[in-house]
Length: 340
Image 1 (cartoon, helix red, strand yellow):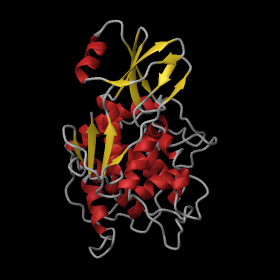
Image 2 (tube, rainbow, N blue to C red; image 1 turned 90 degrees about the vertical axis):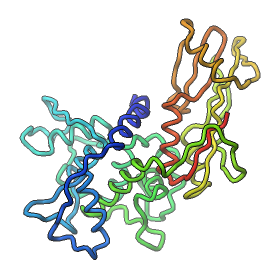
Image 3 (cartoon, helix red, strand yellow; image 1 turned 180 degrees about the vertical axis):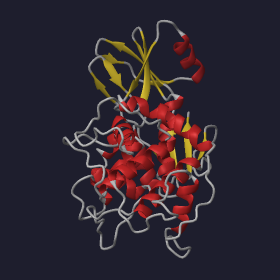
Image 4 (tube, rainbow, N blue to C red; image 1 turned 60 degrees about the horizontal axis):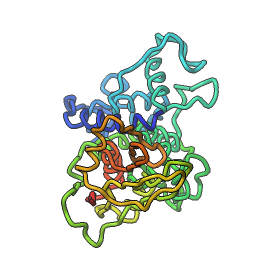
């Protein structure tokens, strides 16, 4: 169900980020201009993602707690806070606590998982969980499950997919010697830096240029489509997110990725499908407008398809494309070509 919500969440997040509400420049007594995190802390405060700990102090060097980071992510994503009558965790039942609604909202959006009775909101957050919570907020949990082998750190045994994504997206790096230090506690300034990197990447729509009516250059890396058959519905989707991820990593920062976006038409005879053929957008639209047409979205392949009688058509909806372009943007791709 959460994967169905991803595209809609992306569109909402984009709308929120296009007109960011910036707070006045914050002046924290404990964050000197020469500190590596000064710019990140300033930006995070301006974006309304973090606050101080009181009396003009940011809390530089202090551990960020699980509840504090959940609140920061709720601010980043623009989620309205929800406060049910009963909390989802045994240690989140007091509605007078500042974090009660934050924990419930983060749980509702899949950022916090119920792995036991307790959430431990005041517990310092390890670096590996900082990565996992961030990528879950962006709804990349399914993708994290299939990229675990891409984790480059030798000391990571859990949350490997999340850490691989955080590393490839430039959100978190290692500590040297092939190590990530997954259990080391994250500080408030490290959390602010991650938030700003996500915010800036999502907000900068010019970072990744999308071409829909241009020749695909030779140096572009194609995101491979997957084709096979399953039961009575021919599974002939476009490239799923994992293929887009592979292409983006191969293209590298500033590189180019190409996606096949032409609709694919097939007919069924029992469990046998015809040879696929590409079709025009106008032809696709006629099917979409027809009353007998039923539309679906494959959460496994992140592509849409429709059925009408014995006809099956795989195609990329605007939401499908937006989702894949955003992944390319998060991975630092410079250009995405939508090939017809």
